[in-house]
Length: 78
Image 1: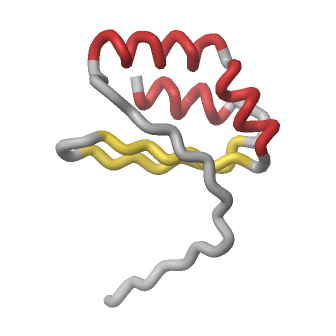
Image 2 (image 1 turned 30 degrees about the vertical axis):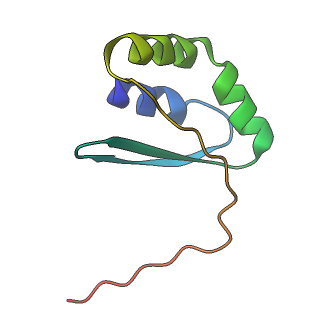
């Protein structure tokens, strides 16, 4: 489902990217150009169906956090 949502998000206006981590908890972070793009993603019918399926099959709970990224940088020691 995660791969399908990534593919679907790529087609959505304002989508900037997505990061996923799977361990004891699954974490997906999606990046959007603005609040309107986030609203459109939330209203996407396929995304809504995936959320319902996730609530039935995989999740006992989840949290949505909408935040503005002010700065993003990396360090990689070689």
